[in-house]
Length: 487
Ligand SMILES: [Zn+2]
Image 1 (cartoon, rainbow, N blue to C red):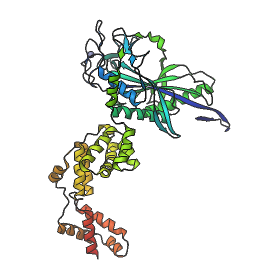
Image 2 (cartoon, protein in one colour):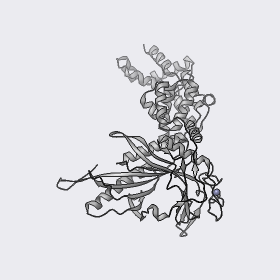
Image 3 (tube, rainbow, N blue to C red):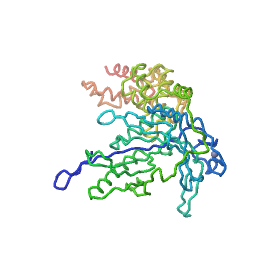
Image 4 (cartoon, protein in one colour):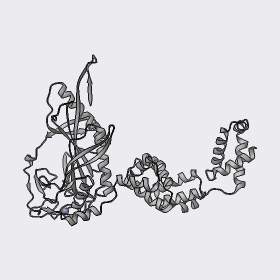
């Protein structure tokens, strides 16, 4: 809810925003939707192409079965009805990145409809409805060359399979939009249907936003903002567009139905074009593809292969591993984290210790390296090995942190590494005694403090001795010797 205050403090009209999302997700198939070209991201321009995906006249599309299976899997996971008899349609438009002058999509009979997912909001749980999910092909990409004042076209992306997930206009704030997108992203990642990388464009959100006076039923005129590629840009675009529309209404002006481009650098949006209606595209059933029939057996088969999703995983972790709720929510916040947790725990049978390494050091390094948890690439066995080395007192906790960083970055084998680097804990008591003696000599004041009853000084002295041993000692051994020598 948005409140506007006048200069004299009199409360003005209240507005609420209504947001619906169209989310495009590139599916993780190896080949394109209607030909056998590679879908790999990057690559020299126009190398992943053939006559079909460059729209040569006379070529025919052949539907990739895996695309249908991923679309159905996402539909099942988002509580949709699966359309057993669906069809593809032609959406006609001209644009240089679309050489066939139409896109094969689904308008009349989308593969999934009437679903919804639950999100957490400040006011509690809320369901965001999913109007439909349809399959379609992606277009190529225009690359603009400012210097030469021209544009190039790369068809590598042309024909990459997409699903478009169209929500109901059920969201009322940027927070709800982010919660919805995060939930959707997790579901799709867990399914393995896409890597959902906003930065690389494998997940793109278009935001339909309108404002209306609080209490009014009728929806206001909406605008659409396209292709926002980070959660931060999405949040800022929503805030910016909300303010812009409210300002227009406050001035007694009208919001125009149009597509706008959000410039995140400048923090403002520009009109791109007036928003088209479906009829502008002259849709008609795609004559080159037979209707798609999903038999009961196929559907059951997909249903049986559905992997465990986050909600089920959270319940199972609570049952099987006896972990605090907080740990469980972090461990399942990315599929990769959950996979590492399960594999490492299976090896060392110490769920809480594995969880601590993932929640504390792993999270810290992810932040420092500005990485996403899905990019983690170390072997769970190396983490399990490290835990065994600490528990067996072969290395100290301090050394373990240093070794873990190496595991995180280079996936080193911890046992070999600590032997090569001579990081094993020193068991030789005389060496520890020697170090402790030196620390006592060099720190007369803390020693006096300790003797005078300030037990806190003990922590300092232990720390100094640990430092002198370069972390390669068992703190309890140091502590024992310190007590001995000081008494
Ligand atoms: Zn092709």
